[in-house]
Image 1 (cartoon, rainbow, N blue to C red):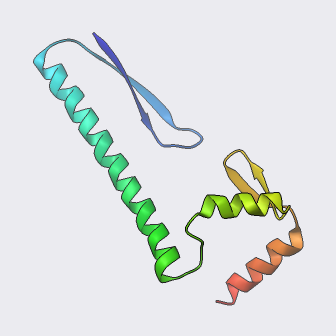
Image 2 (cartoon, rainbow, N blue to C red):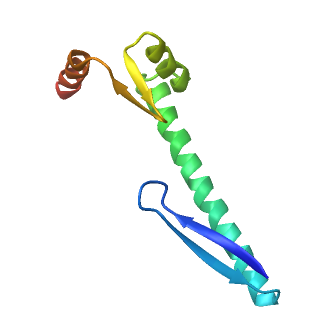
Length: 105
């Protein structure tokens, strides 16, 4: 018997579903379908992420290609604060400046 955990969502409140599979042929088909769907969903997310980065970098020219390095550079210069995998502005005036500039576009 095989126990599989299927997780939906990636944030707060996501759920895990446990599926108990035996060793029959139907169970192997179900397992194969679950793996296939998981790979397809992961590939779609990867393609969307890369497409967004390509558009923002190459076409719009609004972000650097190595965005993580740029954000870490801003953390070193005390413009941003890193909290886990997120970033926030340390200075309220800088946040308001960028918000005002983005609102005028």
